[in-house]
Length: 369
Picture 1 (cartoon, helix red, strand yellow):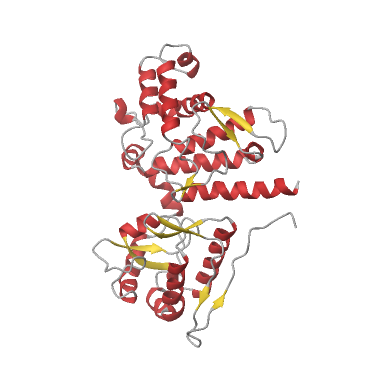
Picture 2 (cartoon, one colour; picture 1 turned 90 degrees about the vertical axis):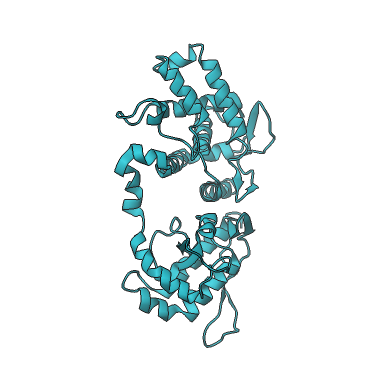
């Protein structure tokens, strides 16, 4: 029982990391995550710690089912494939194109598709997409494979979920499917082609839960001055593509705090994405924003943002404690990461400029003590 509880905590932490640290240029990984959850509740499980063998044919068929409705034109005023929502940032996905062709041949439901001559090429396209795309990439976090769900055997026939993982999918089915669908939806809304089809609704999430980009422009000159014209992350001179970055990512803590901002190259900012920054960046942020320039930031930005250095410090401590507990990766530079585990927090005060006050992050909660 105790071991199962620990694995369930690790499972949730892993899914959380996957959605943050994974590279999602298309929606296939969300579909695969959804499919894995479906299969785990559809197949009987002998015990909570049992492994589960899943045929790739089952997963390929699941992709067809999940994408079937996506192959219907979204916008009635558009015609042809241009009316379809794109599922990746490049060309339309192969699975969508094949399913759209089936529907153009008067195949109106999945039952009819399976009985038609078009099912085999459709299935082959789904299988090829599964093998070349999400199957062996879903578990790549921060550029490294972490095979928590199933080992990367590169089998052409099946995968085997690790012991206890199927039970976790069954236990947290609703949560996993909700997270997969929500991330899938946000990915579709973020693709520029789709925004023209969806209209203002594509901006609904940012409208309700985003941040004021106009207000961020007020912070940029203040930060550039504090950083002496250099990018906060790479320390090279800033250019005309300077952006204001939330040091603790907005996706992690969705509130604007004046002390949480830094100025960065757009390339550095886009590479960092929703990762927490590495420890050396964290120490520099603390020194710059919470110690040396705390009062200056408050004076300059309090008309536009909540400026509370203590609150920013608390949010930072919380974020890095969670990262360490989850064994998350911290962003160091483009395609470069470090392990969060064991990362300390070093504070330098004005009164004691050389004093190092180490705040050790809370460890992963355990139930086997």
